[in-house]
Amino acid sequence: MRFHNFPYKIVITGGTGFLGSHLLKNEVFKDALAIGRTQPQKHQNFKNVSFIINKNFTKIFDKTEVVLHLAARNHVMNDFHKDPINEYRRVNTLGTLNLAKQAAIAGVKRFIFVSTIKVLGEKTEPGIAFKKDDITNPQDPYSVSKYEAEKGLKLIGKNYGMEIVIIRPPLIYGQGVKGNFANLIKLVKLPIPIPLGSIKNKRSLVSVENLIDLIITCLDHPNAKNQTFLVSDDDDMSTPLLFSRLAEAGGYNANIIYFPLILLYIFFRSFSKLKVFDRLSSSMCVDIEHTKSELNWKPPFKVKESLINCWIKDT
Image (cartoon, rainbow, N blue to C red; front, side, top):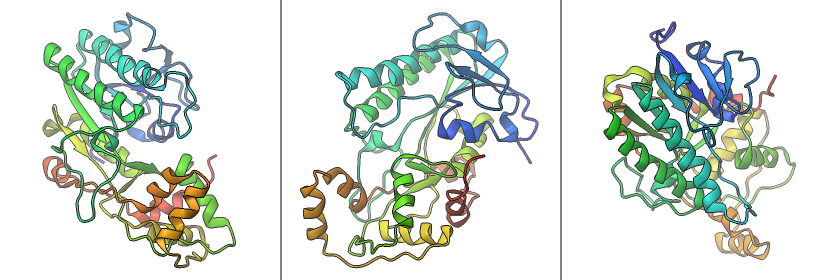
């Protein structure tokens, strides 16, 4: 394998999160230094650092060549915080920029930031996919904070000569997935008809395995320098198709029935769940041709095997 015994010192944030916990199991990152407030399980190389609060921790980056920033305040569906935008900014924007500046001062060569496709918007029109150079259109506090971090990182990179690599993933899934995807798994298990047959959308997803493979590629690829990459499995699916393939992966029968879309809309509206309806019915596609051509990369893991992993319990 090209990246086994990777020679660089790598610092990782967000090692206790969904993506980070998977990443630290990979052979490439076995000796990486994880920093944050909580030590990741089964990873001993850890230092307690709050990059949101601490102002001077450049010594952490001694001989570090790559910082991989995964930590974030993630998207919260029902956020009852008194000032949600500033809470997102405190963690996702100011925390990120503080970390990057400390790394840059210490002489870190490359800073990889996992952002979100949501900086380009919430949905795409039929037959259209987001592309790398599309005009940004963040629409919620989470995506706004990520976009502001992207802008600040580029400025830090320019001022200090540190290479900035930005990766914008769509919904990430895999073993131990939580949130909306976990709810879909619960729905698959229910022995009831699922009225999704009228939905004709297309959505891009990315398995945690494919995202990690891209991150590894970006660690030292010369063409990744100061670039922004979109990523997906390169296998877009409608909501009914995703449901069917997920059911098959778990050994279930997908009992999908046709139900008029307008009635489905009325049903969700009556329960004040129009945001859920919108996510189920709208399209959100990602064009990764730039990523594939620039890095000579393609997603190595197939959707079928990654969906099977979603049914494996964490150990």
